[in-house]
Amino acid sequence: MFTNFKVKSIRKNWAKSDAKRDFGLVTPDEIKRYDNISYGPYGNDNLLDIYIRKDATGLQPAIVNVHGGAWVYGSKEVYQFYCMQLALSGFAVVNINYRLAPENVFPAAIIDINTVMEFIEEHGCEYNIDKDRIVMVGDSAGGQLVSHYATYATNSEFAKMLKLSIPNITIRALGLNCGIYDSKEMAMGKKEDMFLAYLGKGKHIRDEKFLGMVDTIGNITAKFPPSFVMSAQEDFLLSKAEPMYQKLQSMGVQSVVKIYGEKGNKEIGHVFHVNIKLDEATRCNNDEIEFFKKYV
Image (cartoon, rainbow, N blue to C red; front, side, top):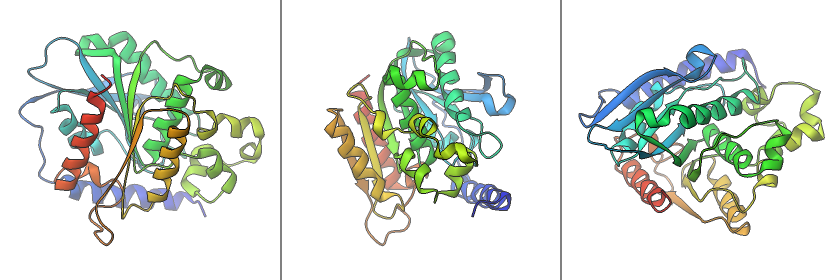
């Protein structure tokens, strides 16, 4: 059952684990970073960092990272070293904070992501970002958010349900990493405590209009961006990858599914790719980058 104690426990324990994972890592010499840029009105929740190679010239393709954390935890700081590794490959990387549950419920995070895209449309060129060559990545809850937002961005009728005005940017591809995607099913099942914290407790969760607004799978069209769907043999969300891939295939969306690690190797588990000390994480991230380069 969802409790504030559970959220506090997640935030405390996961922060310790993430700090241990990244201990000793530093900003690569090749990377220039712009930290704590304000993109919206919600203080620390609306800050982003941008990482780009020092030798970059002209407008660059960019990756927007939407962090995971069960909708209740996480920050750009937790993902900085992973994002800077991606930036070494020749992409500018936009690493964002967004409003977390349970203090902020749907559609707060989606609106924040859209505000990031508005910032890129208006100010991206100031940081060598090409707004017409945008890639998005998200893992775990971030995978849900990225797939949900991309559905709004590529389905105008769906966007109207949320009265969301999509900026004039082009999402070329997605990295959906260890994610969960059938948000309507999750809402109806009422078993995912943290997702319910994100949706907000109340009768509205049973409302058909509300369920329609959170229905990613049911609103994906052929315009959905090409997608790299990733999981691991020891990822507790492994079962979510293949159905998402099959859905994209059925809609004619260019996509691949990649499963890493081996059964029994717990080190290569949920969101292993963020731990850049792992060789398998490097392999996975390089595979994803090569996929993105086909579309930017």
